[in-house]
Structures are given as structure tokens and as C-alpha cells.
Amino acid sequence: MSARGDITVGVIGSGWIVRAHVHALHTLNHLGRLPARVRLKWIYGRRPERMAALAAELGVERPTTDWAQIMEDPEVDVVANAGAHPLHAPVSLAAIAAGKHVLCEKPLAVVTDEARQMERAAAGSGLRTACGFSYRFVPAVRLLRDLVAEGRLGTLRHYRGLYLQDWLSNNPDFPGGVGGSAVRDFSHLFDMLRHVVGEPRSVVGTAQPILTGADDTFLAGFEMAGGATASLEASSCATGWKARHRIEVNGTEGSAWWDMEDFNKLHVMFVEDQRQGLGGFRDVLVTEHSHPFMDTWWEAGHVVGWESTFVHQWGTFLRSVIEDRPGDPLQAGFHDGVRANELGDAVLASAREGRRLDLDPGGH
Image 1 (cartoon, rainbow, N blue to C red):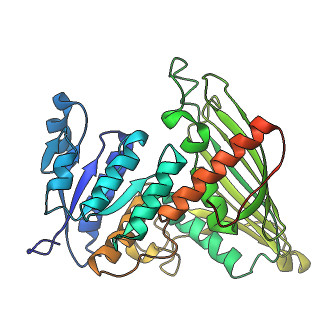
Image 2: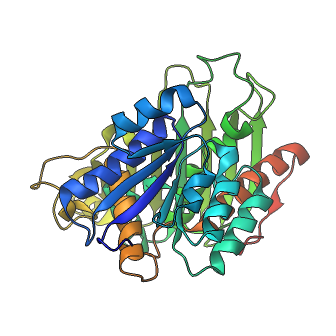
């Protein structure tokens, strides 16, 4: 941190997701919940003709078209790596080598061996590092995870994850998915599976190049370490769907589901209610101050949105940096980024080989 007590950030990238990260960093200053102010000093992008205007628009002090400048600046404490997928590995590795903390967007890397290299570099650095699986920071999703972890839903039987978009349908000439693969573009699904219910032990997968030469859609069936089954489905060419994201857990004592289009509600049913003649799903509006992350915001009943997940993610990460303590164990680290890649690779390998594959729960 600087002598004046700021935590100084350099931002990598100029795409739409960068706006979500920068918005969150500014919001943390507005909320005043961190023990230091966030200073946005640098933003990197490839196109010099637009970077000055973008920096001014986003409230960042300096634009650059050379990300090495950010690594060389001794004032920069943290790198927000939200650049194009091929930049995730080289920029993050350079940042770690320069002694800077890193929050890297998902997927951690396009190539899994590069992701493993990032994990190894982070493990020996003494720095805080995280992978940007922001859905871990949805209040309703965290409440769902808590219900599972506390055993409120009983023994788990099934998990379902769905993520449908149509951006590729609207761009039929696009030369492959972002990063080249739906299992990378929708890696949130693999992380949510592990975050909510744990590690899988086998997979049967299928994937199809609907509009490109890459896997534009995938379906995967998992057997979980605890005996439950899980299914994941994703598509970048699901016509009409912009961000159809839903997760569901079914157990012996209840079920719960969350839908991004109904962001603030967790839908829950308990078998005990059914026994008492009060069966069916209850809608829990996750806005009480006792609910996950909601003590940061407004009075109960006043909802938050998708962008709040980045506020929660960055607030959790920066607090560990500022206070020089280990990161929150529920924040995705580089190991979680590697595991998401490995599960995606396993889905594709199963699809190629036409058989079920056993998985190493420990990864690598």
C-alpha cells in the first residue's frame, strides 16, 4: 500500500466485463467499508485510439497500451486481470513475479497447463491471488451453499446447473468461442458444482460444434463423491436466451433452486413442511442483514443486482490484501480455476472417447 494509505490497482482489459470490475472498485469507495481507499491508477487495452477516452469514462488515472508498464510501477499493489482470455496467464505470471496481488477473471487460462503454472507461482509467492468466479458471491447462492453445508437439505441426491446464451447465434461468423470452447466460456458451471456440492468422481460428456469448429454446447453428467448425481448444460447458441443461468439441489430433506433472472430470491422447500401439510417451495427474499453479504447494503427488502457480486468479490479480496491475512476460503483461488479447467477438459475427453471417465478428486 502507498504511504498515503491507498490500495492501488492496475486494470487489464477494455471489454464489457472490465466495466463491472471498475464499477465494483469505485462502489467499494462509495460504501466506505474497506480500511483503505481504492486508487485506480492504470488501465490497459490494445487500441490506443480509444484508451484515453475509456480511462476518463471509467475514472482511471492513466491509460496504456503496454501492460508491462503496470507491472513496472512500484505503486501498483493489485492487478485486476480482466483482459482477453489469452492474456490471463502471461499477465498474471508477470504480476506475481513483480510482487503484485492478482484477481484474474475466469477462465484462469485457456490452456490447463498454463493454469497449473499460475497455481504453482501463486502458491510460492506469499501474495493474495483469486480467480473471478463471481457467482460465489450472489447472496442467494451463498445461502443455498450454507443450507447444503449445514445438512438442511439432507443427503444430496441431485444437482443441476444450466447456462444458456445466444451471442454466438447472433454472430455466426465468429471464429470460435471466446477462448475457443464452451467449457471455458461457461466454466462458472464447474466452479458452482464444486462450490455448492463438492468434487465429482466420474463424468460422461458430450459437446457439439454447432456454429464453429469448437464446442459451442456441452452436456455433462457427473457422479459425485458423496453418491449424488449432477448434470450441467451450457450453450452459446441457445436462441433467445441472453443469460439463462440456474442451479438446483435436491436432497432427502428438501430442495432449493436459484435463477439469475430472479436474482434476489432463493426458492426452498423442506420435506418437514410437506409432512405438516405445508408442502411446496417458499420464496426467500435474500435481503435481510443476516443474509450473506447483505450487511453491506440497504435496509431489508431493498434488492441488489448482478453487479453486486463483483463488489462482494473485490471487497473480500482487497480486505485480505489490506489486512495482510489469508484469503477467505470460500473465495475461488487459482486452484479452483485449475479444477474448473480440468473438469472442462474431462467433459471434452469423454465426448471424444464416447465413454465415462473416472476423475481424480484432487486434480492434476
